[in-house]
Structure formats: C-alpha cells, structure tokens
Length: 218
Image (cartoon, rainbow, N blue to C red; front, side, top):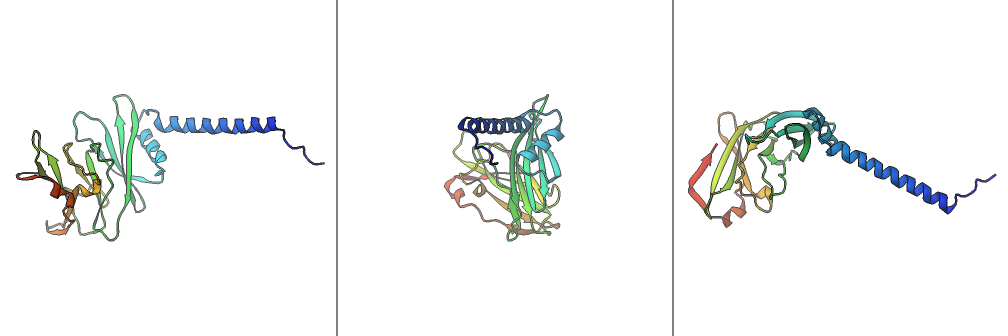
C-alpha cells in the first residue's frame, strides 16, 4: 500500500523544524568560537577551528611588544602552510583574534604572510623563507615622523623564530600603503652576514618625502 503524501501543513512543520535546528546549530557555533575562554590553550583550539586550521601545530609563541598589552601571537604550521594568529587576554579570559595564513612561494626566497587591512596597526610581520641559506631577514619600511610631512626609513633584522619562519616587530607608525604587500622591502642574509636576496623597493615610496638623515635600525 502506498504511503500517503504529507499534507502542506506537515511539510511546513518539517521546514520550520529543520530551519530551527539550523539556526540552533549556527548559534552553538557562534558561542563556541566567540565565547571567552579560561585558558590560552582553549582559545587556541577555538582559533584553529574557526579558521579551519585544526590540523596544524604550534611553531612558536610571541608576546605583544607593547608593554600595556597581554595579547599573545602564535605561529602555526600545517604542511607547507603557515599562519599567524592572535589571542587576546583581558585579565580574566582569553578570546580569539585575527588570523592570516600563507604558503611558501617556491620561486621566491622570502614570502610575507599577508598583513591585515592597512587601516589597523599590527605588531609583527611574519616572513617565510624557502632558501635554506637565509639565516637572518631584514625588514625595511617607512615610518611617519610626528608633526612632519616627511617619513623616515626604518629597518629591523631578526633570526628565524622557528622552522624557516621569521617574526619581525614593527612600530605603530608604520606607513601602510593601500596594497599592504607593497609597503615594505625584505632582505635575506646568510650566516656570515652576506646579503643574498633583496626585494625591489616599492614604487609607492616615490610618493613620499623620505628624510635621509633620520633612519632607524633595530
């Protein structure tokens, strides 16, 4: 005997039930990934889940260079993919922050992990090396000068944090262009300090009045 076709009312009830379950699932996920956490490890777990990077492992941790901030930053790796993420601490709880990932470019000795939007400052630039001879990476960027239309060149140089990954601190007065990856240049040095790679100077720097007498190195 053939089963009777469901009535329109029954179909509506099923649609409403399914829609309610879907909304409930979305609400659970929202709470799961946005709710404050008691430990840093719980927040890290949520960060990985939120950005579908849960098969990754921790390469290195870094503290915020700003002494007024207790936020922490983590470098993750999954195969040839790397990621830099932030975890925010408010004194009681941990929360997930931003997340950026990139893969090493085999045709480039140095690959920067794409920064966030240029409108927001960030404390680090993460750089990946595909050249085993590179022992140190130098970041050169433009920094604004208070009460001046000029900018100054600044450089910061660091050894690898871990596994061919370099974490270079930058100041809040970093001048970010509209194309964030065109805001700086990179250099790679070997163990003896010899320059073995240098990226081109950004064309956008020609738009700025650079003060040659005020260069900062750290």
